[in-house]
Length: 470
Image (cartoon, rainbow, N blue to C red; front, top):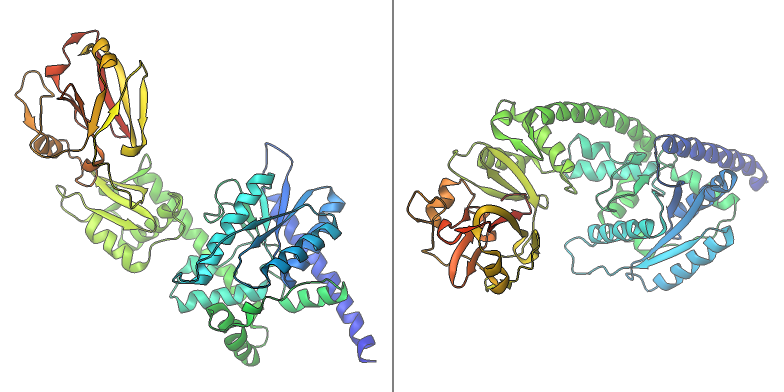
């Protein structure tokens, strides 16, 4: 009797969940613009309950609308059952008639946060699978309870509005997945108990990841220890948090619009004008910097402490100082009144000489030095015959070198010339010196030595680095 009384309620939940999913997905698709080819959708399919329900719902929807659907699985290798989960996922996708593919990744157990490392590696692998098969939209099974858990995690980390706004239904750009793949979450308004009811009513086979019960992981501790306590005191807590999340997202949208206005006023190409920034309040500077970092491709925004450091060290330093600061995977530098962001790397410039042979090219890439040698015709330069007969030698400064860039002035030390050119100290090691027959003929960032560029109709050397400097 108990089963018969429960059945109508379960059937109602299943119908409601199906309708919620389809309305949410249609709202997502209405904002997805794909011009090059027909839209292809993929589901991040672990084989667990949530993603299994998502795959069933998506398969039904896409079959009715003749949309291309894929199921992508990531094998982490962290569980002894990972091979079984892979086989299960492949079999279930085949039963639904959904094309399937999987990627194997390795996550180091010694990582500072194995949760973060596994998440980053998983999304990177999913992005690669999407590009491999031409899927422009990846759907994940994040639901209402996941949203509430994420808000609590962000609160405990002291996050700002962007963090508290948490997950959105459509993320057009995902730094973790890379270019060309959007992220959709059509189940965000659905509580997990409705997904469980759907799986039971439709008899959907799924796997259980034993690590989900391990409360050493922060999210699991919140899910199994903290959330039940809150729910007993505040029933419907997840739905209430979902409403608050929408308010936070709206507030963040307004802040982003303000940041876009400030960016338009302060932008100088891809850099920022420091004088323009100094006219803003600290709060608007911080808001703009968070927005700008994300626009520059950083995977996360700087913390409050980091922004304070940026303002004091980078924006308010003396004009004759050229500080550098590594933040959020980016290298910040001050150059001639501009704040420039470059990809951060631990690489060091070459220390050994290297030969470059010119065969008439206009440009020769020198990736070891993060740039390219440029060759152009001039009224007076190095003899082309001499350049073709002898290799140029690129090497770093050793100290004491002198250059004569102006024929009317004596030669000067490179140190003085670099200072006069306002070239930041951290940039100089990546500017090679070019020697021909043992003579210094060119210094990247400074120019030619006129004593060796006296042939009529000759060739003048130039340099283009990663940031476009010559």
